[in-house]
Length: 129
Image: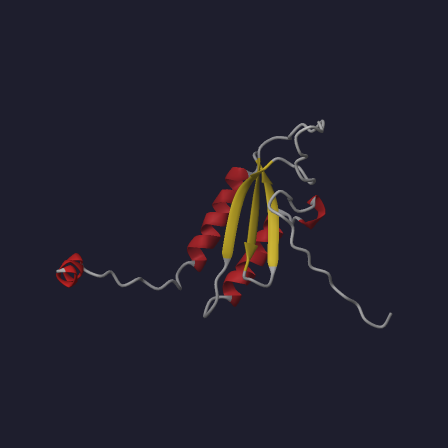
């Protein structure tokens, strides 16, 4: 037809994204940098990490047995600003290289944080009396 529709689906926590939707590590880091730059003045970037075994289908209920052997340990990283979502999978062989690049990226983009005002304990104790 004349119109093209994009479908966005919310998947339950037992689902992992399909392998084709993962970005290679360097592309993920550049997209993450763009997210940080976009949210520099206002907004937040949410990053989640979890263990990933390569499973793309939900875990079956008890009673049905599935022959699934997990591959080597992997880490699934997801980042979102509330609108755009990006994700990648880092294998155990690439962890050190990725972690160095990831920590440098975080260090470079964490400079815009505001310090929280610390309330002194003496004011709290006086208010309680």
